[in-house]
Length: 240
Image 1 (cartoon, rainbow, N blue to C red):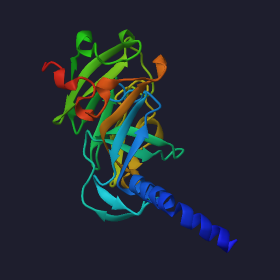
Image 2 (image 1 turned 90 degrees about the vertical axis):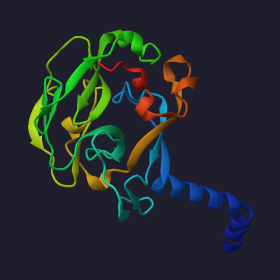
Image 3 (image 1 turned 120 degrees about the vertical axis):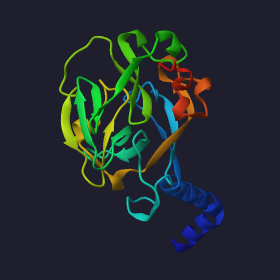
């Protein structure tokens, strides 16, 4: 048995070491994650493969949530990945509330620490290059509050649901409130609760590449290597 293991190690040690280094790299330094759901549309589309900086806030022991060094804190507006406290599935959401914030959502209008967000409608022609299926079924807005801006999406037909209003709630210490940019279709803090600091794995930075699942996995070339800040045509959004 030992001779067999030695033979395997001798013949495959380069490959085994490569795999080990890659696993450690993806666990503690940087990773690329597939996006299987539409909860972050229009910022992140189904089929996007995003690059996650796992050194954005701290250094973890590989394959664990235990931190060795901590040099930064997640901020409002950051897009982060974390295992859901509900079922441990890997999620990607946007940070809306940081520790100490008072958050209210009134009929999909966000209020943070008493400041009500403004909502500027985004014309359909601005979104013409963003491949969103059935875009005509949704309304798109530039949401602005406390110096943060992002594009969000709501159903065209207004409706009242348990998720369109909540609060006010105060974000506890070492916890964060997460929402998806697809506000009417996101399983976020409205369902799973606050997310603890030690669960945040890293900050999503870039779309590495993108495949259109609805059209035979055709590559979306224009989304390759696109920073998330401009991946939805935000750079060309009108300043309303």
